[in-house]
Length: 344
Image (cartoon, rainbow, N blue to C red):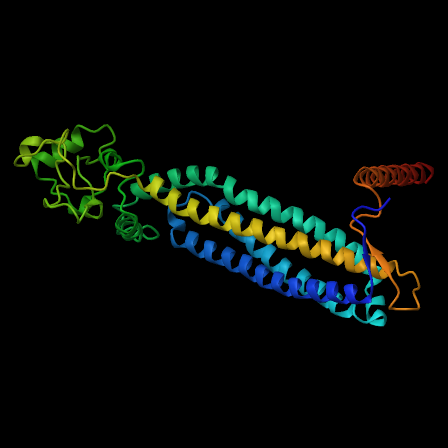
C-alpha cells in the first residue's frame, strides 16, 4: 500500500508542477546563499589564519562551498524536470534518470543535515586550535625582524584592539613570555641583566602587556608596565584597582565571534535543508502523478501521487534485501575470480 496517496487531475498536476518549479528556483538561490556563507566564513578564517594551529579549521567552509555548488546544480536540474513535466513528450526523456536523481537528492539532504550539525559541533575543535595558535603567536610577537614572523606583532595588536581582549586566557599570559625583542633591551642595564639571569630560559620576563591591551575607555592613563608593583604607581593596588587593560582573553573573544558565525550558518543551512526536502517530496509527487495516469494516452485523465510506493517498513525491508543481495553478488564474483586464478 502506497504512503500518503494524493489524487490528481490535470489542473492539480499543472499547479503542482508550477509550484515545485518555483520552489526549485528558490532553492537555487538558497544554494547560492550556502555557497556565499562558505566563502564568507573562509575569508574570515583566513584573516587570522596565522593564529590557527592547523588548516583543519577550513574543512567546514570548504564543505559549505561544495554543498552550495551541488545545491545550485541539482536544483537547476530539478527545476528543468518540473518545467518539462508540463509536456508529456519532454518529460518522457527524464523518466529513466529520475529515480536515481531522487535517490541522490535524498543522500544530498542527509549531507546537508550533517553539515548543519557540524556548524554547531566544530566549535569544540576550533577552541583547541585557537588556544594553541594564539600561544605560538604570542611567542613570535617579538620576532619583528624574523622572515615569516615579522607580521605577527601587527596581527596580534590589531586583533587585541578589534576584539578588546588581551592574551590567550587573560592578560597575565603576557607575563610568562618575552614579548620585547632583544634589540630593544639595554643589556648594560642591571635590571635587564637581573631579569634575564633570574629566568631559566634566559628570557626577559616582566609584569607588563603590549599597548594593544589598553582599554581606551579607562579614565586613568594606561598602566601596562609593572602591573603588579603597587609602589611603582600612585594610588594603585593591583589586587583591588580596576585595571585599565582588557580582562577578557582573546581565545574566548575569537571563539565567541566564530562560534556566533557558525551557529548562524548552521541555522540557515538547516532551513535550506527543509526547503530541499520539500522540493524533493514535490518532485516525487510530480513523477508518481504522471506515472499512474489511469489512461496514459489521455493527459487529462486522473492519477494518484504518493510519497512511497509501499509503507515505510516495507520500503526499509526492500532496501535491506537489495543491499544483502548486492553483498552476496559481490562475494560470488570474488569467489569466481579466485577460482579462475587457481585454475590458471
